[in-house]
Image 1: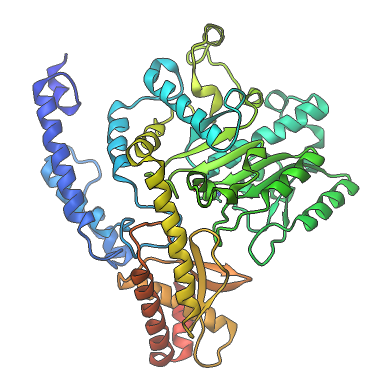
Image 2 (image 1 turned 60 degrees about the horizontal axis):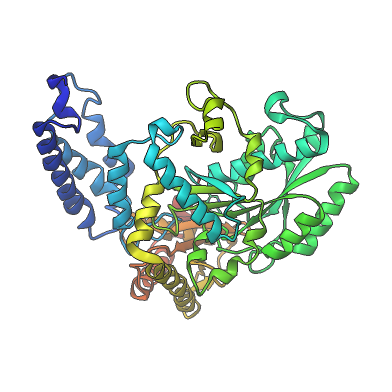
Length: 508
Ligand SMILES: *Cc1c(COP(=O)(O)O)cnc(C)c1O
């Protein structure tokens, strides 16, 4: 062992181990002091103030800095001006507080640093990921023996994989065309994907990346609950076929980003079967309902999907990043398969040595499966489900609070735990100004460290949004934020001339 660098890594030497203990402990203290103990969901600091200390310091000094000093620096510059995801008033995005069990796992997996691409870089990790994937497949109603899947960086990657396999499967079965080898088929510009207008933007992004262009995505209108309208879908498919176009995939969403809406999955599955479309379900957000005895019925039909996206860094309370792609028929993985002599030679396949690289579009890949595993083990399903159920309940109560306030308008009854609403001015005001006022209210909450909430547009009009993933948030918290929203809204209406806040709202 080269002693010169021994203490910079964790290893068999006593110095290394005692430093590891000391620095881990110090890291924990900084996290508690400069993050866990924060009283506001954001410090309120302006971008230039957050950037200043980093500008004043060399990124790569000639000689290293003492760890204690470095941790203090990171604590006071990064942790103290972070979005405090654990705070009950940090309710903007599908961005969750991570479970303690997952943080322990994150430390373990970073330290073990296994790479999931080949068996010889991740022996035990490969076997554990395979076990968890098989459990997930069963959770969503797939047959254990014929399904497969892989952990991914999240919904973006999982949706991409679903549509990639859909495209290649269609080309292969229709025209015996091998996209992997020959690129897009001559009919490529006629391929079409269907999804609802509320589907995640990554469907269009995937179409672009797959060489089909965003015009390949046909969006179907949603009903008042944000769900794809099946009769319109059916017409859309007929129209495409009449026009000589080639619909090959249907994406259903289980939990849209804004309203948490769930498409009518069994009906979509039936239409997909009838028209031989690959049925992909984007359950990045709503997939977690599968754990809940109370709400799993909302996912009825998910087992009929050819492939499923599920994210764990949302409603499964895992640190970023952690998601999965599940495939009903593992045979379809053939469209992705490549053998590299140095990673997964054909001899390994023949000898039954599992190299997961063939199931992923990533090569080097984190052992994120451990986080989900340790969380499931430590909490157990019942407690996990109780947390998820609680947040759905919280969203219902928050919707009631909004309905009870004259200055606020609820945009839709929440399906999951996202609540969309807007401030309604007390005096007559045109749409542009009302939108600007809504933006200013949100900025006011952030600048004063009162709450971190999201904005969105519904029918082109500015709205505010709570995404209530955090099971520590109470109706007291949501009530307080709503009261602040009304107060700020009224102050803005009175304090400033309308022109002034309209302008500031537009700038921000
Ligand atoms: C978050 C989300 C995505 C994107 O997933 P990432 O994990 O951010 O890559 C896709 N679809 C839906 C419905 C989502 O909520």
